[in-house]
Amino acid sequence: MNDRPVMARINALAAEEEDLWARAGGDGVTPGERRRLEEIGVELDRCYDFLHQRQARRAAGLDPEDARVRPPDVVEEYEQ
Image (cartoon, rainbow, N blue to C red; front, side):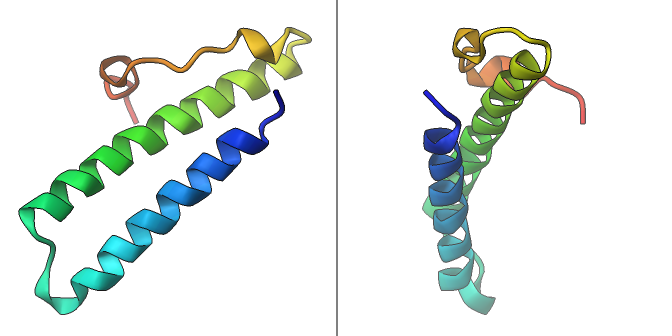
């Protein structure tokens, strides 16, 4: 697998996030939209983490196919 599917997922999630914010306009987001935005944020974090793992493995001369998508509770505990 190359990184294109991961990048496509990131782009799709970012587009959905942008659409939710655009539809909210000046009225703010509904509780359901807020939950979805939070879900999107977590999924984006997981995708970026996976992509970075693949890039790091490739840079180190290792097989990027050994990278794994980590669970949300692991990714969300990273310090910014």
